Image 1 (tube, rainbow, N blue to C red):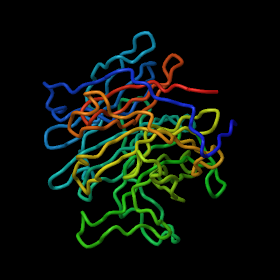
Image 2 (image 1 turned 30 degrees about the vertical axis):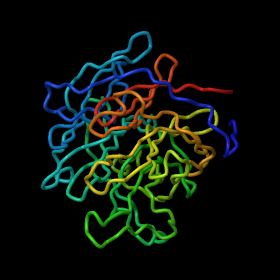
Image 3 (image 1 turned 180 degrees about the horizontal axis):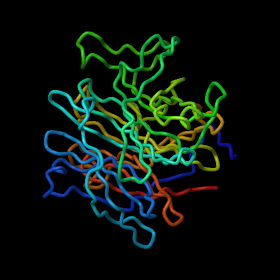
Image 4 (image 1 turned 90 degrees about the vertical axis):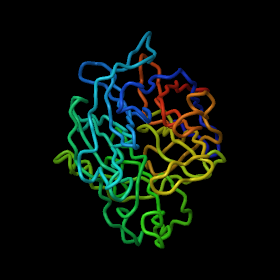
Length: 359
Protein backbone atom coordinates (compact mmCIF):
# COMPACT_ATOMS: atom_id res chain seq x y z
CA UNK A 1 0.00 0.00 0.00
CA UNK A 2 1.28 3.48 -0.92
CA UNK A 3 1.48 5.69 2.19
CA UNK A 4 0.79 9.41 2.26
CA UNK A 5 1.80 11.86 4.91
CA UNK A 6 -1.28 13.01 6.86
CA UNK A 7 -0.57 16.61 5.90
CA UNK A 8 -0.09 15.90 2.20
CA UNK A 9 -2.54 16.80 -0.51
CA UNK A 10 -4.36 13.85 -2.02
CA UNK A 11 -3.33 13.26 -5.65
CA UNK A 12 -6.89 13.38 -7.04
CA UNK A 13 -9.17 15.96 -8.61
CA UNK A 14 -12.75 16.25 -9.85
CA UNK A 15 -13.37 17.73 -13.30
CA UNK A 16 -16.87 18.57 -14.52
CA UNK A 17 -18.34 16.58 -17.38
CA UNK A 18 -21.79 18.16 -17.52
CA UNK A 19 -25.42 17.99 -16.45
CA UNK A 20 -26.79 14.45 -16.56
CA UNK A 21 -30.41 14.97 -15.53
CA UNK A 22 -32.78 17.90 -15.14
CA UNK A 23 -36.25 17.78 -13.64
CA UNK A 24 -39.08 17.07 -16.08
CA UNK A 25 -41.41 20.09 -15.83
CA UNK A 26 -44.34 17.95 -17.01
CA UNK A 27 -43.93 15.36 -14.24
CA UNK A 28 -45.55 16.36 -10.91
CA UNK A 29 -43.26 13.91 -9.09
CA UNK A 30 -40.30 16.08 -10.15
CA UNK A 31 -41.93 19.46 -9.51
CA UNK A 32 -39.25 20.52 -7.01
CA UNK A 33 -36.25 18.86 -8.64
CA UNK A 34 -34.18 15.73 -9.11
CA UNK A 35 -31.02 15.42 -7.04
CA UNK A 36 -28.59 13.39 -4.92
CA UNK A 37 -28.68 10.08 -6.83
CA UNK A 38 -27.39 6.59 -6.24
CA UNK A 39 -26.15 4.31 -9.04
CA UNK A 40 -26.02 0.56 -9.68
CA UNK A 41 -25.18 -1.80 -12.52
CA UNK A 42 -28.13 -3.99 -13.50
CA UNK A 43 -27.95 -7.69 -14.43
CA UNK A 44 -28.35 -6.55 -18.06
CA UNK A 45 -24.98 -4.78 -17.93
CA UNK A 46 -26.56 -1.33 -18.01
CA UNK A 47 -25.84 1.41 -15.50
CA UNK A 48 -28.86 2.82 -13.66
CA UNK A 49 -29.30 6.11 -11.84
CA UNK A 50 -31.55 6.31 -8.76
CA UNK A 51 -32.40 9.99 -8.34
CA UNK A 52 -34.23 11.55 -5.45
CA UNK A 53 -37.36 12.95 -7.09
CA UNK A 54 -39.07 15.77 -5.19
CA UNK A 55 -42.76 16.47 -5.65
CA UNK A 56 -44.66 19.53 -4.44
CA UNK A 57 -44.60 19.87 -0.68
CA UNK A 58 -41.04 18.43 -0.47
CA UNK A 59 -42.25 14.83 -0.77
CA UNK A 60 -39.40 12.70 -2.10
CA UNK A 61 -39.37 9.39 -3.95
CA UNK A 62 -36.52 7.35 -5.39
CA UNK A 63 -36.63 6.79 -9.13
CA UNK A 64 -34.76 4.58 -11.59
CA UNK A 65 -33.33 5.68 -14.93
CA UNK A 66 -30.98 4.04 -17.41
CA UNK A 67 -27.80 6.05 -17.87
CA UNK A 68 -27.12 6.84 -21.52
CA UNK A 69 -23.40 6.36 -22.20
CA UNK A 70 -21.74 7.60 -25.38
CA UNK A 71 -18.08 6.85 -26.10
CA UNK A 72 -17.63 5.88 -22.43
CA UNK A 73 -19.11 9.13 -21.12
CA UNK A 74 -22.47 9.38 -19.26
CA UNK A 75 -24.50 11.99 -21.13
CA UNK A 76 -28.16 11.53 -20.19
CA UNK A 77 -30.85 9.25 -18.80
CA UNK A 78 -33.95 7.32 -19.82
CA UNK A 79 -36.51 7.36 -17.01
CA UNK A 80 -37.99 4.05 -15.86
CA UNK A 81 -40.31 5.06 -13.05
CA UNK A 82 -40.20 4.94 -9.25
CA UNK A 83 -38.69 2.16 -7.14
CA UNK A 84 -39.36 3.50 -3.63
CA UNK A 85 -42.06 5.81 -2.27
CA UNK A 86 -42.77 6.93 1.31
CA UNK A 87 -45.42 4.27 1.85
CA UNK A 88 -44.39 2.95 5.28
CA UNK A 89 -45.37 4.61 8.55
CA UNK A 90 -41.77 5.34 9.52
CA UNK A 91 -41.34 7.26 6.24
CA UNK A 92 -44.28 9.62 6.84
CA UNK A 93 -45.23 12.27 9.40
CA UNK A 94 -48.46 14.17 9.91
CA UNK A 95 -47.23 16.99 7.66
CA UNK A 96 -44.23 15.51 5.85
CA UNK A 97 -43.08 12.41 3.98
CA UNK A 98 -40.10 11.23 2.02
CA UNK A 99 -37.53 8.64 1.08
CA UNK A 100 -34.42 10.65 0.36
CA UNK A 101 -30.75 10.70 -0.69
CA UNK A 102 -30.13 7.04 -1.54
CA UNK A 103 -26.62 5.60 -1.60
CA UNK A 104 -26.22 2.16 -3.18
CA UNK A 105 -23.30 -0.19 -2.60
CA UNK A 106 -23.03 -3.56 -4.34
CA UNK A 107 -21.53 -6.00 -1.84
CA UNK A 108 -20.20 -9.02 -3.77
CA UNK A 109 -19.76 -11.06 -0.62
CA UNK A 110 -23.54 -10.92 -0.09
CA UNK A 111 -24.57 -10.81 -3.75
CA UNK A 112 -26.90 -7.84 -3.22
CA UNK A 113 -27.17 -4.13 -3.79
CA UNK A 114 -27.55 -2.38 -0.44
CA UNK A 115 -29.42 0.93 -0.49
CA UNK A 116 -29.19 3.24 2.48
CA UNK A 117 -31.68 6.09 2.48
CA UNK A 118 -33.17 8.72 4.75
CA UNK A 119 -36.75 8.10 5.86
CA UNK A 120 -38.33 11.49 6.53
CA UNK A 121 -40.88 10.46 9.12
CA UNK A 122 -42.51 11.74 12.33
CA UNK A 123 -39.19 12.36 14.13
CA UNK A 124 -37.32 13.87 11.19
CA UNK A 125 -34.56 12.22 9.13
CA UNK A 126 -33.94 8.63 10.22
CA UNK A 127 -31.68 6.05 8.52
CA UNK A 128 -33.18 3.03 6.74
CA UNK A 129 -32.13 0.18 4.46
CA UNK A 130 -33.39 -1.71 1.40
CA UNK A 131 -31.79 -4.46 -0.69
CA UNK A 132 -32.13 -5.73 -4.27
CA UNK A 133 -30.64 -8.34 -6.56
CA UNK A 134 -31.97 -6.88 -9.82
CA UNK A 135 -32.00 -3.07 -9.09
CA UNK A 136 -35.71 -3.05 -9.95
CA UNK A 137 -37.43 -4.51 -6.89
CA UNK A 138 -36.22 -3.26 -3.50
CA UNK A 139 -37.04 -5.02 -0.24
CA UNK A 140 -37.07 -2.84 2.85
CA UNK A 141 -35.13 -4.17 5.80
CA UNK A 142 -36.39 -1.27 7.87
CA UNK A 143 -34.87 1.46 10.04
CA UNK A 144 -31.30 1.10 11.24
CA UNK A 145 -30.56 0.47 14.90
CA UNK A 146 -27.36 1.39 16.71
CA UNK A 147 -26.43 -0.92 19.58
CA UNK A 148 -26.09 0.84 22.93
CA UNK A 149 -22.49 1.71 23.84
CA UNK A 150 -22.11 2.57 27.54
CA UNK A 151 -18.99 4.70 27.05
CA UNK A 152 -21.01 7.14 24.88
CA UNK A 153 -23.56 7.60 27.69
CA UNK A 154 -26.37 8.10 25.19
CA UNK A 155 -28.54 6.28 22.67
CA UNK A 156 -27.50 7.06 19.10
CA UNK A 157 -31.00 6.11 17.98
CA UNK A 158 -32.33 9.33 19.55
CA UNK A 159 -30.69 11.45 16.90
CA UNK A 160 -31.44 12.27 13.27
CA UNK A 161 -28.87 10.69 10.96
CA UNK A 162 -27.91 11.22 7.32
CA UNK A 163 -25.17 10.55 4.73
CA UNK A 164 -25.21 6.77 5.21
CA UNK A 165 -23.08 4.57 2.98
CA UNK A 166 -21.64 1.05 3.15
CA UNK A 167 -18.13 0.01 2.15
CA UNK A 168 -18.21 -2.51 -0.75
CA UNK A 169 -15.81 -4.99 0.87
CA UNK A 170 -15.28 -6.67 4.21
CA UNK A 171 -13.06 -4.63 6.55
CA UNK A 172 -11.53 -5.39 9.94
CA UNK A 173 -13.87 -4.48 12.80
CA UNK A 174 -12.59 -2.96 16.04
CA UNK A 175 -13.24 -6.30 17.74
CA UNK A 176 -11.07 -8.09 15.17
CA UNK A 177 -14.02 -9.72 13.42
CA UNK A 178 -14.62 -9.54 9.67
CA UNK A 179 -17.20 -6.81 9.24
CA UNK A 180 -19.25 -4.73 6.85
CA UNK A 181 -18.76 -1.07 7.70
CA UNK A 182 -21.09 1.88 7.20
CA UNK A 183 -20.37 5.59 7.44
CA UNK A 184 -23.04 7.83 8.93
CA UNK A 185 -23.55 11.40 10.12
CA UNK A 186 -25.53 11.80 13.39
CA UNK A 187 -26.79 15.25 14.35
CA UNK A 188 -26.88 16.03 18.07
CA UNK A 189 -29.33 18.94 17.98
CA UNK A 190 -32.64 17.84 19.55
CA UNK A 191 -33.91 21.31 20.40
CA UNK A 192 -35.70 21.66 17.08
CA UNK A 193 -37.68 18.50 17.89
CA UNK A 194 -38.32 19.07 21.59
CA UNK A 195 -37.55 22.61 22.78
CA UNK A 196 -35.24 22.66 25.76
CA UNK A 197 -33.40 19.43 24.97
CA UNK A 198 -30.43 21.24 23.45
CA UNK A 199 -27.63 19.35 21.68
CA UNK A 200 -26.52 16.56 24.04
CA UNK A 201 -23.48 15.10 22.26
CA UNK A 202 -22.18 11.71 23.42
CA UNK A 203 -19.63 11.52 26.20
CA UNK A 204 -16.15 12.30 24.93
CA UNK A 205 -17.37 14.22 21.87
CA UNK A 206 -16.08 17.76 22.30
CA UNK A 207 -16.94 19.00 18.79
CA UNK A 208 -20.71 19.01 18.34
CA UNK A 209 -20.65 19.91 14.64
CA UNK A 210 -22.11 17.22 12.35
CA UNK A 211 -19.23 14.84 11.57
CA UNK A 212 -18.55 11.52 9.86
CA UNK A 213 -18.89 8.40 12.03
CA UNK A 214 -18.42 4.70 11.28
CA UNK A 215 -20.31 1.62 12.51
CA UNK A 216 -19.94 -2.10 11.85
CA UNK A 217 -21.99 -5.23 11.12
CA UNK A 218 -20.66 -8.71 11.80
CA UNK A 219 -20.07 -10.23 8.34
CA UNK A 220 -21.02 -13.77 9.33
CA UNK A 221 -24.30 -12.59 10.83
CA UNK A 222 -25.15 -10.73 7.62
CA UNK A 223 -24.37 -13.81 5.51
CA UNK A 224 -26.86 -15.79 7.58
CA UNK A 225 -29.55 -13.11 7.53
CA UNK A 226 -29.45 -9.84 5.58
CA UNK A 227 -31.56 -8.15 8.25
CA UNK A 228 -28.40 -8.12 10.40
CA UNK A 229 -27.27 -5.19 8.19
CA UNK A 230 -29.72 -2.99 10.09
CA UNK A 231 -28.03 -3.63 13.45
CA UNK A 232 -24.87 -1.52 13.76
CA UNK A 233 -22.21 -1.87 16.46
CA UNK A 234 -19.02 -0.15 17.59
CA UNK A 235 -20.03 3.27 16.32
CA UNK A 236 -17.20 5.81 16.52
CA UNK A 237 -16.21 9.20 15.05
CA UNK A 238 -14.00 9.25 11.96
CA UNK A 239 -13.63 12.88 10.86
CA UNK A 240 -14.87 16.25 12.08
CA UNK A 241 -14.88 19.52 10.13
CA UNK A 242 -11.27 20.70 9.86
CA UNK A 243 -10.62 22.53 6.60
CA UNK A 244 -11.92 26.03 5.79
CA UNK A 245 -14.43 24.70 3.22
CA UNK A 246 -16.09 22.44 5.82
CA UNK A 247 -16.24 24.52 9.00
CA UNK A 248 -20.00 24.08 9.51
CA UNK A 249 -20.34 20.33 8.89
CA UNK A 250 -19.20 17.42 6.75
CA UNK A 251 -20.78 14.20 5.51
CA UNK A 252 -19.86 11.12 3.51
CA UNK A 253 -20.59 11.04 -0.21
CA UNK A 254 -20.41 7.98 -2.50
CA UNK A 255 -19.34 4.52 -1.35
CA UNK A 256 -15.61 4.55 -0.51
CA UNK A 257 -13.41 3.64 -3.48
CA UNK A 258 -10.44 1.31 -3.04
CA UNK A 259 -7.30 2.99 -4.37
CA UNK A 260 -3.60 2.05 -3.96
CA UNK A 261 -3.28 4.20 -0.84
CA UNK A 262 -6.37 2.89 0.97
CA UNK A 263 -10.07 3.83 0.89
CA UNK A 264 -10.78 7.08 -0.93
CA UNK A 265 -13.86 8.79 0.48
CA UNK A 266 -15.32 11.74 -1.40
CA UNK A 267 -17.29 13.91 1.00
CA UNK A 268 -19.11 17.22 1.18
CA UNK A 269 -18.09 20.13 3.35
CA UNK A 270 -20.37 23.03 4.29
CA UNK A 271 -19.78 26.65 5.21
CA UNK A 272 -22.39 29.13 6.35
CA UNK A 273 -25.57 28.69 8.38
CA UNK A 274 -26.75 25.18 9.27
CA UNK A 275 -30.53 24.69 9.28
CA UNK A 276 -32.33 22.86 12.04
CA UNK A 277 -34.98 20.20 11.71
CA UNK A 278 -36.94 20.26 8.47
CA UNK A 279 -35.52 23.54 7.15
CA UNK A 280 -33.18 24.04 4.20
CA UNK A 281 -29.77 25.60 4.84
CA UNK A 282 -30.29 28.75 2.78
CA UNK A 283 -27.07 30.77 2.65
CA UNK A 284 -24.83 27.75 3.14
CA UNK A 285 -22.31 26.60 0.51
CA UNK A 286 -21.73 22.89 -0.16
CA UNK A 287 -18.41 21.83 -1.69
CA UNK A 288 -16.80 18.45 -2.37
CA UNK A 289 -13.46 17.19 -1.10
CA UNK A 290 -11.80 13.90 -0.29
CA UNK A 291 -10.08 11.93 2.43
CA UNK A 292 -8.13 8.72 2.59
CA UNK A 293 -9.06 6.04 5.14
CA UNK A 294 -6.74 3.30 6.36
CA UNK A 295 -7.68 -0.09 4.82
CA UNK A 296 -6.60 -1.86 8.02
CA UNK A 297 -8.60 0.53 10.21
CA UNK A 298 -11.18 2.51 8.19
CA UNK A 299 -11.95 4.67 11.22
CA UNK A 300 -8.49 6.22 10.80
CA UNK A 301 -7.92 9.12 8.41
CA UNK A 302 -4.56 9.00 6.63
CA UNK A 303 -4.90 12.20 4.60
CA UNK A 304 -7.52 14.70 3.47
CA UNK A 305 -7.87 17.41 0.88
CA UNK A 306 -6.97 20.85 2.18
CA UNK A 307 -8.92 22.57 -0.60
CA UNK A 308 -12.23 21.56 -2.19
CA UNK A 309 -12.13 19.47 -5.34
CA UNK A 310 -15.42 20.87 -6.61
CA UNK A 311 -17.21 24.09 -5.67
CA UNK A 312 -20.50 25.49 -6.99
CA UNK A 313 -19.70 27.64 -10.01
CA UNK A 314 -22.07 26.87 -12.88
CA UNK A 315 -25.64 28.14 -13.05
CA UNK A 316 -27.03 24.67 -12.31
CA UNK A 317 -24.87 24.52 -9.15
CA UNK A 318 -25.56 28.04 -7.90
CA UNK A 319 -29.26 28.54 -8.69
CA UNK A 320 -31.98 26.14 -7.58
CA UNK A 321 -34.08 24.96 -4.67
CA UNK A 322 -31.00 25.37 -2.47
CA UNK A 323 -28.39 27.41 -4.27
CA UNK A 324 -24.62 26.94 -4.12
CA UNK A 325 -24.61 23.16 -3.67
CA UNK A 326 -22.48 20.37 -5.12
CA UNK A 327 -23.36 17.16 -3.27
CA UNK A 328 -21.58 13.96 -4.42
CA UNK A 329 -23.49 10.72 -3.78
CA UNK A 330 -22.47 8.05 -6.33
CA UNK A 331 -19.33 6.78 -8.05
CA UNK A 332 -18.82 4.34 -10.94
CA UNK A 333 -16.05 3.20 -13.25
CA UNK A 334 -17.05 3.41 -16.93
CA UNK A 335 -14.64 2.34 -19.68
CA UNK A 336 -11.63 2.93 -17.45
CA UNK A 337 -12.70 6.32 -16.09
CA UNK A 338 -14.17 6.90 -12.63
CA UNK A 339 -17.20 9.21 -12.64
CA UNK A 340 -18.81 10.90 -9.66
CA UNK A 341 -22.51 11.78 -9.75
CA UNK A 342 -23.66 14.71 -7.67
CA UNK A 343 -26.63 16.88 -6.78
CA UNK A 344 -26.64 20.42 -8.17
CA UNK A 345 -28.38 23.11 -6.08
CA UNK A 346 -30.96 20.52 -4.93
CA UNK A 347 -32.50 20.71 -8.41
CA UNK A 348 -30.47 18.76 -11.00
CA UNK A 349 -27.82 16.04 -11.28
CA UNK A 350 -24.31 16.49 -12.60
CA UNK A 351 -21.36 14.24 -13.35
CA UNK A 352 -17.63 14.80 -12.88
CA UNK A 353 -14.56 12.70 -13.67
CA UNK A 354 -12.26 11.66 -10.85
CA UNK A 355 -8.70 11.98 -12.07
CA UNK A 356 -5.36 11.19 -10.50
CA UNK A 357 -3.10 14.23 -10.54
CA UNK A 358 0.21 12.62 -9.49
CA UNK A 359 1.88 9.24 -8.96
